[in-house]
Image 1: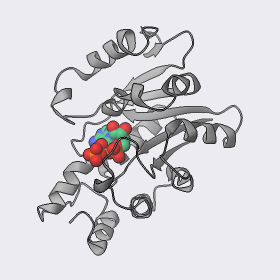
Image 2: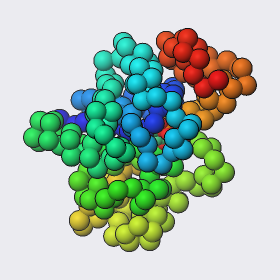
Image 3: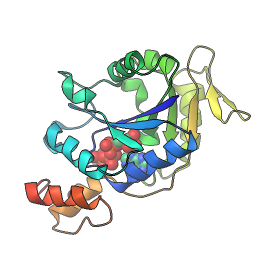
Image 4: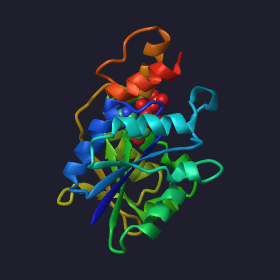
Length: 221
Ligand code: ATP
């Protein structure tokens, strides 16, 4: 069985996250993909991030009737910062023994992986699926996959080579890294938060029940 782990701050969850999760699940024939909100995201400014319980609730409301995508509160149950390596170890110890686990992340997130805790071990433990992220910021206005290629072949390790036949990067001592194109939806949580601050609608960018929750709790105002 194959499983996907898709971590993030989800501050708040939006349709870019959900569509990407669905397309990865179908593309890699995953039995399940877990969206995993971080309790204390090590890479974000804390003041910007709403309470973890609210972010979890927004995800649960977004996914209420989507059996193929699940939410995991594993990182909210741990104390301290949420490190992906700890979540990977948790899923490895709880999923059926021969499961294949894929970590899913946007290109923007992947290009910072060398700042993550125990990233070398992470690359040894799980396969990664890197998905495209449209216009996240000006840094990525060039050819994003070219940046990924440079990062993998001469940046972080030098040990990766692209395999045309398997459509992924392979390394002698690490798990494969796949690149996967999802429908490019130019939506970010930052954009959602600024629309709310400006008093504008977030309709059709965020699932309806999540948007109602944001409004009722007065989040991001
Ligand atoms: P923020 O704008 O606050 O930085 P975000 O929209 O990037 O937030 P995160 O929760 O930080 O959302 O992202 C979680 C994961 O989802 C990351 O791997 C990110 O690259 C990916 N992701 C976010 N938005 C999209 C999108 N529109 N399409 C594809 N992947 C996305």
